[in-house]
Image 1 (cartoon, rainbow, N blue to C red):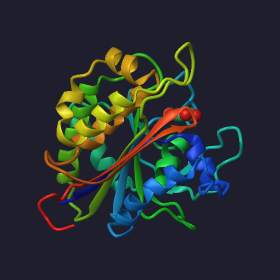
Image 2: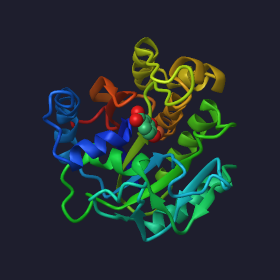
Image 3: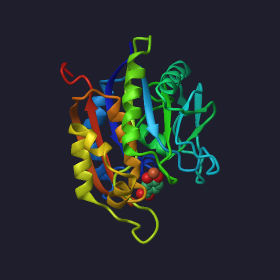
Image 4: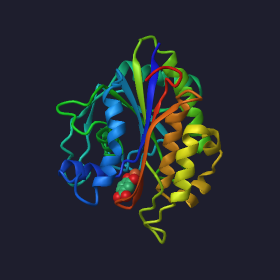
Length: 285
Ligand code: DHB
Ligand code: FE
């Protein structure tokens, strides 16, 4: 049986990756953000899973906007890093885990989540920046194979928070029913509050973010009750990305232990948040 050992929620702001790629992490405007990642990175370095599942959204880089699956899963052996128009990031391609992907696909379809299947997929900043937040110096390879789970958060109608939480719970059951004894890390990505365009461009809602950060640990059902409109009103049109944190949380135990959290405003136009949870709350870390 496979076991989720940790969950990591993190923003995926592209300039966080660019700051790392260009050696700018100790610049005055970036230092506090990256210093705040350190305790999580240290803990994660001592808790390397056999495989990770990364819940993310593509931003019209790997998938054209004429095809927008609500939920999808990658089943490939490898995923290229997308060139988003300024050259591809100097980070490794992603090694997949087709066996686990196909198991999750079958179980989730059986539970009524009809995922779109990606046998080929280039991953953009929504995927590579969270990997960099976890592993700043991957060398030739990321720490383990990673299965991409895709969510539409960029085009109306996005899935509801409740549907994402339910998908996470089904994902947790699917992981538990895997016949290989592997440890699993799960990443929920995007957020926190931000809006990139329109009259409210640049809006940040620190109060809402603080509520979300607290509730994702202690009361995710409260967040699952938020409507799409409430999320966009409170967190911004791109802040709705945080529904992906609920998929991660749904796959974890009811009680988790917070290892570390960090909140920084602004990274580019975004409130950057990180929260790391130990899923073995009753055991020694
Ligand atoms: C920014 C944030 C995002 O979530 C994104 O996908 C692209 C850009 C930003 O704040 O610059
Ligand atoms: Fe985004």
